[in-house]
Length: 456
Figure 1 (tube, one colour):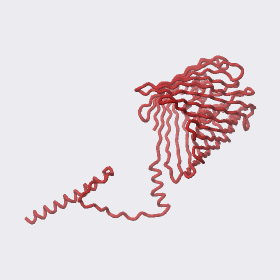
Figure 2 (figure 1 turned 135 degrees about the horizontal axis):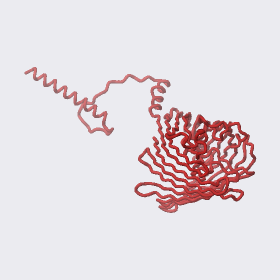
Figure 3 (figure 1 turned 180 degrees about the horizontal axis):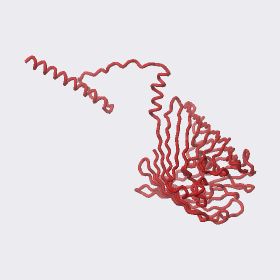
């Protein structure tokens, strides 16, 4: 009997110990809410050895692993079919896949770094379209400016001083200023435009932002592609340029911006016009939103700039730029219109060599370069978001004329539908028809895009 008695006591001890262990395990997986008061004895964990102290140890065993562990991996992919048919050229088709893979570290004592690779792959026949002159077999076909390439898209290091919000960044980076009318990343094309630059952005007082960048190379959407002719105007720019942009948005209904862009650009292609994209632009804008009731609001923008030749440019001119735009938002509708003028002087048009050009003057991309006689663009747009399915559809109309000389450059009709598919996917269908009139734009263009985007 003693044996059974001791055996039972031993079993009770095992069960009691097991219950304590299970309680401890359950507490590890609990949601963090304090448990109800209990009479079960607390389990005291074994003491951990004291952590080593010192700056180096804190860095290598604390701050650095945390920064690496909290880094963000980014993946962006765009599968696109583009059809382009210009009446004085052969029709073109491009099936392309653009992929980007990036890693951005978490801040570490104010420092942060990012690296990103980009690849553009043609899934069809490489000579089915004219890839900005980089494939001789595509000669005579309509240009689709998505040449195949693999490159380092971004690689930068930054430091942020939080007491006086200031960020210093150096390396290869995206730069998009204001609405990208003068400085942008050309996001519509498969190969993104990036800049080798050193930049500073600071907010010395509330609502005031000051940006400065020195740019020594511009990696364009066509540049650094094998097969591009030596004398092509599509090469990357060597640069000795300064970008200055100051904005204030402390007023509820308006944001004020002033800028100076001193662009010293060199195509380095051996031609006499290699420096003629160099220009100095001085300007400013005011933009904002004004509510006019629970369901109605107005968006507006006004902008003016003056431009002259700069640095080693061989041309001599001084041209104006101005734009006014007004839109009314009455959900689910948006209506609006505007008038944009890129002036001309001495037979030289206002230049925008670093702009995101596809977003302006029609999606057919007829006016990627300003005509020598300048350009007037009178445009209107309407958008409706279809209920229940959340599908915005936008229609745009452009009427084009020269700024001087009285030329009728024709008209354009554009339409686009965009659909978000969950958190990471976006589908886009887009159409553009340009109907030209006067030379050198006496031709028609039809373009169609169907694409799927993945962004993580």
